[in-house]
Length: 320
Ligand code: KG4
Ligand code: ZN
Image (cartoon, rainbow, N blue to C red; front, side):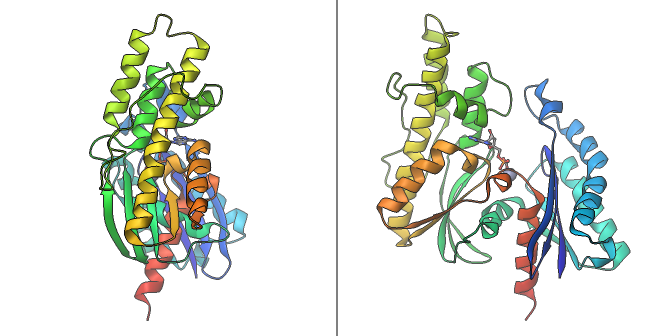
């Protein structure tokens, strides 16, 4: 069965083709980052209009790359939420129009389930059950994933998501949106310990987190600095921020593995592309002789492949 995945929940238009036997055949992502950058964040109306411009062209591109035509499609998976209403509507409308024309099923996929299952496209792929850490621009959650479709929320951020904290820190350091990759690169030049930032809720016995205080601490550090433009100071702030976030996520990840008595950790969502977080979590999990899985780097941020794989899993679960 050939399944087309469509993602349009925010500022990336993603399409992908997955063959149930051969795996991922092709995927394309068009990012709108350059378009939104001038506004310092995503402008929903512009996002929707750009998805309209891209989605059919990107669908044709993946079909062409895989040497397939629309009539080869057996099903379509599309992000049904959460996300920007207008942006979602573009993907959903296109998916239903193609599905109606071809007489094939259209499966609505939860965006976070897509992120979570993107690691099934990694080699090696994780096996159920596992603990999932979802770290994106909108969510930071620990889940127990018993099997496909069985997701138990173990804990989550009580305020800002980790990705949001990256983006706000980037803004305070004068960097453009989205901030994650920039803060991460700047942190490489910073000195650990040169600036101290808090690790909110790191020692709380639960699996909840909080990142808004960290953002305020960065704001205080920047406003009190005699020379906030100094390149080494900026790098030290970025380093301190990355160290604080990775310390909290690593401590909570270990706690989640202990609590669930599971030994596999799957990390997903845009922040799972972060170099320092990948290294730190790998170190902690391997220390416990556990296994850690990340999606391929190109599938960490929003993409159509994660939606296609989630749709395929749903179809397979529905077929006896
Ligand atoms: O999963 P995603 O693409 O969109 C949402 O569903 O939210 O995540 C986007 C978030 C942004 O906050 C972005 O700054 C962050 O992921 N991000 C990173 C990196 N790449 C993307 N954060 C830290 N390091 C990165 N390399
Ligand atoms: Zn996402």
